[in-house]
Length: 126
Figure 1 (cartoon, rainbow, N blue to C red):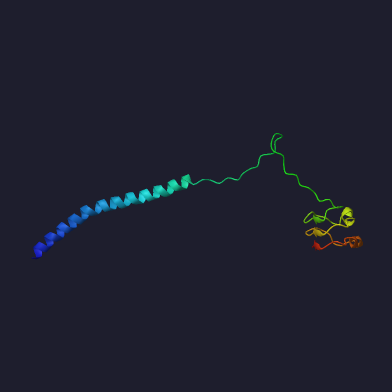
Figure 2 (cartoon, rainbow, N blue to C red):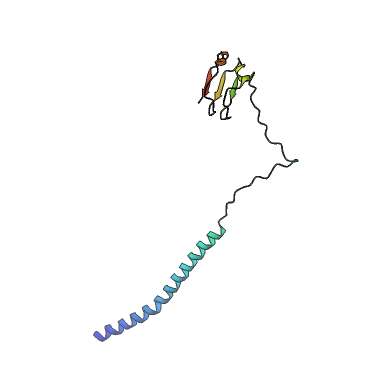
């Protein structure tokens, strides 16, 4: 009975050695395939490059026009962040101004002529 067990054990070992080689080969091919797939994905990933705007050419569309507020007549005036150090003289003469934004400027004092702004409803400064 013991000899019969040893014979079956030899057969089992021989069969396992023969059948484990294809499994190892398949696993190796699978690992190589996955590695290749990831390398291929890296190479096909688009590279983002910054867009450089070309200079404006004479035949191209005109640039948008920025309209400065008319300080003498406009009712809504936004001079936010224009680096003003004092209130413009024309603005002091505007009695029709209703909404005035002088925020983010370098103005430290306001002149007494602002009393002419009798219609002023919103005034932002700071």
